[in-house]
Length: 260
Image 1: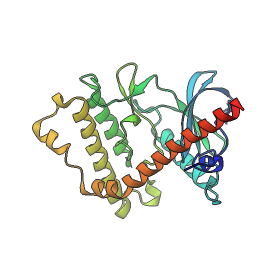
Image 2: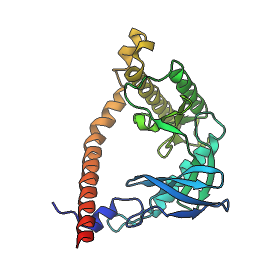
Image 3: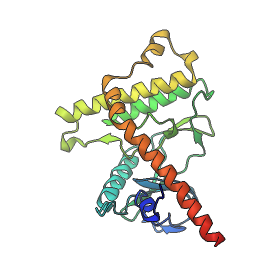
Image 4: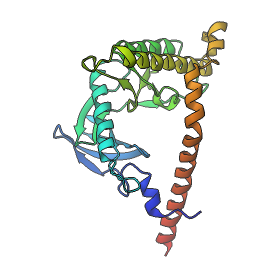
């Protein structure tokens, strides 16, 4: 199948645009782009250099999709995630919030380190510290939600754990009934899911620290995780493969244009 450039662009958060080479944040400071980390459907993320050092810029979706305006969703997700970074500010293990960038972007501090890899020999205290961090998040009536991806767990150059990407994290303020009724019940389920995924990562990297009972539980996801996987995994795989094929097709088209 030959992918049209317009089709490729429609699956990118910024459409035909790339992340800007430079920006001026709402704090009045100017930042220059160093590297683009990721550009997917919901957001684009990149590394920038500013007067106070390196920061990460995350820009929510601004491009339409199939003729439908999606900018409102990008702005809502950006406001939601930026608000959570502010709420977790000064919590060790979560990058500090820096500034907003318009209505669909924000900056947070850059963590020197790398994404956790399966079977990585982390320190003896790594998962104790990560458990404490997750407990602190849960104590704020939040659920991280996206802990299934080990790429969201960073191993700092100091060997300590850090969590990034709170785009789909769960939080409903108390004034909206966050600690009552259905909201409290859903939050409890999502927090239990966080703890299961943490145990799974622990087993994959430091099984020597787990008891036989913990090892058994790490292979037994809650029933609702199984249902979620059964429903979403085929679509996730299809979207990933489509994006990969489109990206290769776009690069081939650009190379052909250069040679011509």
